[in-house]
Image (tube, rainbow, N blue to C red; front, side, top):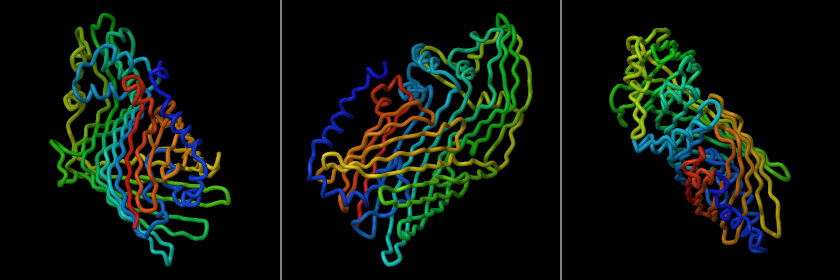
Length: 433
């Protein structure tokens, strides 16, 4: 059904155009070798890649938004966030996905300046990013309780163990340096992080038993909840500080380039303005009880008072510092060039792992077609992470001084807005001088 909703014409046209162009693209083949690193990656381009030919300075602005899940399509998420009508068919779409409920969302915007010291082949990197991340790993039973209540668990125990949730917003200021030695380029970046907002929930164990006819509920749980502030966050009143590092390596072989990247390896410490709830207990609710009296989901509106639920279930509040470990990523990519009918084609194959709960290694293959007039288009396939299968497409311009790129690594998620749980959009523009 999802395939029927997706129009493959966009992909077939972009590939056909690339094969139709002849020798006009051949003159671009040599220049494209210097631009290859920009286009070797599936989604966001690492900040530490070297400057391509065209000048000693480069200014880049970019923005990227993506969400990956094994159960929550973007259409349903938009209804949750907007308080729109959340009907039974919306709940059933989420219910029908198997396994644990996994979700990641990221929004990154920023700019970067690079300067190449040609005498020593050293590159200076200076950058800024605004970042928002949300990650969730919850049990299928927990989401069913929120969507349908506990009637479906009569004389059963709903599993609430080993769940994690984190919402994180911070600003990142970065300084890095890179050096080229023959076929090797290596670079490292250190970043100062200013935390703006954070909520963090972890459960070690938990279960909710509903007695026959709903006469009582037995609830046991062991959880910790941290929050970085009380009230509204403020941009000029940071709640936490931290550091992170990025590393990038490129090694050029005769027929290709091997790329290795570590990104966002770091930590943020939230100050004593934060508050914490910790509880390990078990108790019984007497009487005929519907869990939706606490968490209200009906045919008309989705609402969840998280603070109220936490305070009702937890012990007294404390004010201790706590840490957030960033979801670092590790990626290896091999890139090489081929020609078909005089059209240069860059083939990229890669693997990515992330420090996220139940995150499967993501594999991808991407083909970049270098067209006349210095235009480029890419098609890509990927699988792993929190989503099963993705089809993507990029289009851009890679001139000597100016570059621009727009892309999506999951077109199915855009086309099947209410059915497929993964999508992304990325924009990038740069100028070299």
